[in-house]
Length: 309
Image 1 (cartoon, rainbow, N blue to C red):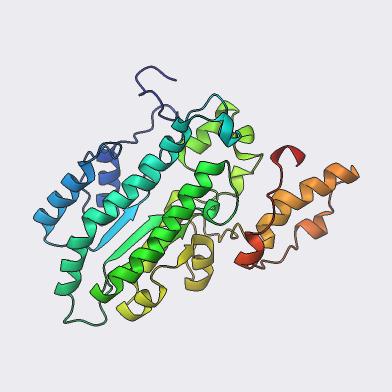
Image 2 (image 1 turned 30 degrees about the vertical axis):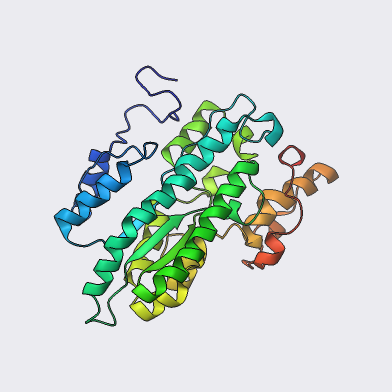
């Protein structure tokens, strides 16, 4: 780790300002009003303190996006067998990534219910929204056992909360980004650790963090009837882009991870080329249809082995 970086923090490129203050500045620069607030989600009571302050100062809480996550450091590797990984793997993955997500939703819900009551006079106003950032690991084996259990738990949390919050006019959703070009992931490419950790996935085909943000904006803009009808559902960012017509910052619409356009180039074609010793023709690679596998098919069966691709 680089000098001055806290133990366990993933490295990013030199010179990047990844502070809450810089994030708030970017919000303001893009037309909003950003406020930087320090909140250590690994500590109980922190999220309650922050949400209480927000509600006290703003008088409402319209949206909560839970995206904080800790990437575990393990000598056995992220893809290790669960009986060889210590309990620190479970705690790292599901401490902030699951337990504190629950804590945040628990603390926010009374404020969001009160906000919804203030909106009763306008039936078309967007309802307060709890957005839980999850991943395809909630549907199909990814990385290791604790990871999948945690993501499935996040998805189930969105569903079960929707049952209890529906009568109060508060919506929930579980959001699935694809492969995201985060600052830390891009640095792993530079450091030469990305291929082993990801299973040789092509990060050049990944999504920007802003792409997920645009999906959240779209959900938060839906009227009450439309959003409540989707409450509790899994929303895939790439699939939302096609439904609502928005793009990533490069003007493109990346395929969903459960699309043949993503699965064949990343999993099937490399295996075919390895076994045959011949490249898959470009006329095939360039004409893969953007067809989504049903969730039942995507979730079934063992995953491709990273070392067989």
